[in-house]
Image (cartoon, rainbow, N blue to C red; front, side, top):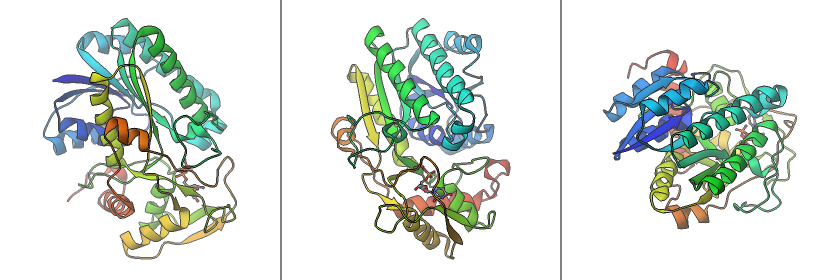
Length: 341
Ligand code: UDP
């Protein structure tokens, strides 16, 4: 059984990835500092999978604690590196925290891997590294030109990893996620932001009556209905891409970079309408000014992932919004209150 170390192991994308990995022949060691997650998600992963996972509450800044995990688990085969601060707006306000946490945390992880001879890693990157691409759907060889500190940290973490892979003979997969949404079909695992920055968690909370209305960030973009268009990807599809990547690294050497999206774009208005269908009532919204740093439209070309990983997104818009609504309805306070159903 292959042992995988998962950083940020209690978070939104990690928890869904853990569930997919636990269907297979993998043993999981999770680390997390709970800065944007909580232990309840790990408990639910264990319940849903019927398996146990190992967990260490540590911060990637703590090099000694990190090293101790590798010493305690000498047979780690590979790492999936999710842990990072991830709010674009916040990254503009407190860039030093983002650079320190994301870059230093990754450097510490990569150094610990080197110290302990672990040479395989799947890295959680973002389509944000493309900035405002000239051509869409964007391909993996488009220029990396992030426009905010969060995206810059992802681009830097990628580059450090690529340089290390070349120097140290590592085998790496960099997954550039488009817009992850939705939740596990059970409704027990989902996204639990302290304050929703992204569109769908915000729409969800308005639908649930927690917030008054959605503010649409501009309807004068150069898109069919004037609102921003993004490539939304169901988090369970995204989770499966990580399993495929781990499998890929078992037999394929070197550096691999993949877009993980659907290739299909939806506008903000289309997302709100789809969510209205999911929850069965109207959702209040108003059009506000554009958000600084936003772009009109981005979608990903996913042919490379399909050809090389044998992966393609299977779950469409209805699955995305239905599962998001199920999670929201079953967990009105996120992980804070145990679901009764
Ligand atoms: N958006 C919006 N209102 C919100 C949050 C987001 O209109 O409260 C829009 C945003 O301008 C973009 C799309 O929804 O066009 C997706 O934004 P999100 O922050 O979820 O992801 P991004 O692609 O910016 O990383």
